[in-house]
Amino acid sequence: MDARQTIAIRNRIVSILVKRARLNAAKSQQECADFLGCSPSMFSQYERGVRGLSLPQLEALAYFLDVPVESLLDPEQPYELQEEEQLPMSQIMELRQRILAVQLRKCREASGLTQQEMGDLLGCSAYMISQYESGKSEIPLAELELAASHCGRKLDDFLDDSTVPRGPGVRQGRILARLDELPPDVREFVLKPTNSLYLRIAMLLSDLKADHLRSIAETLLDITY
Image (cartoon, rainbow, N blue to C red; front, side, top):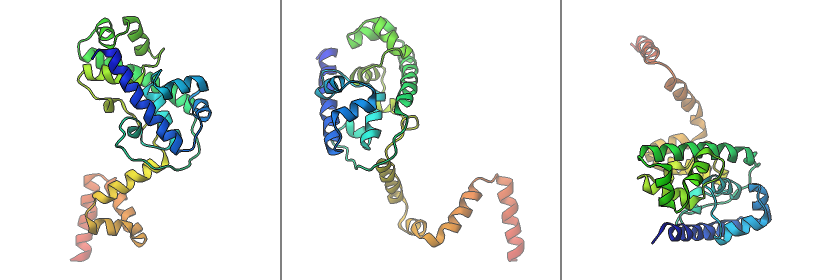
């Protein structure tokens, strides 16, 4: 299977997942297009797999639809929905595109590939690769995924939820997952509101330097004995 076929199949998979998430969130194509700053016609092409979304666009959609970005990449990933005040996503996506351009260039250079060689692998020109790496053109998700695989990397290596935040439902799910990882007795202690003072003390102690902690321990010993 050549690069263009691989890209076309990947675009189609993502388009189906995006449409599923949009319908579950009860959002229209117009609303999604407005949020991404593109035309409804363009968004329709994304949702039909005719045109590929970029990773920043996909991360923005995940935020707008309040689903994990992984659920727009993998049909096995679950998600929940929840409302939240919207962020200035156009500015965030612009910043994200610039970051991604630098990441792509570093990834290619680390693999010893020229822009021409990367273009040959993706079925596009060296000029197009230079456009992607300068941030002047957004690299579609499928192309990014294929470029990453040729560099021995995964798409997950390019995901970033510090620039494009996760929705509230996703964040809450991660918090609950972390709580589940705690030993039962520790989890029970943490979840008791009456223990909040002890937890705050522990937080303060965790920020102290070793010599300060040693001094506190010695003081406690003097009081105890």
